[in-house]
Image (tube, rainbow, N blue to C red; front, side, top):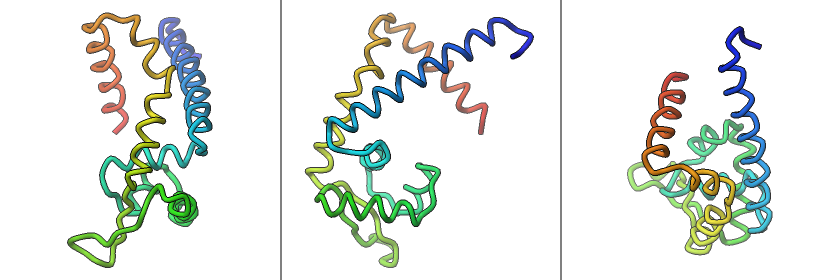
Length: 139
């Protein structure tokens, strides 16, 4: 623990938020017939991405991502397409069915949005700014 009780409180509150978000994320993924990692891949595919970028986003090995993509592809949710600039690179693209499933998944993430509804718009803007500063500070 730090010597600063405010910092201790903030860290404890962030831990509670992460726990609640994780539970909501897992439930939302399961409601769409996805594992949490499959949901993360579909959510990341707002644009075509090569496998190595997906691995980076997931903080995972490329070989693990290959299996995830194989399973999503077998369900018709993603497809591999050659990159327009470098045909040796295969981009992963959500199919229309995969895009719908990803959208439904995001909409079913209740905890992610519900607590924010209690904040006034200007409070949400300020919270976003503070969180962005925290994220930018770790880079």
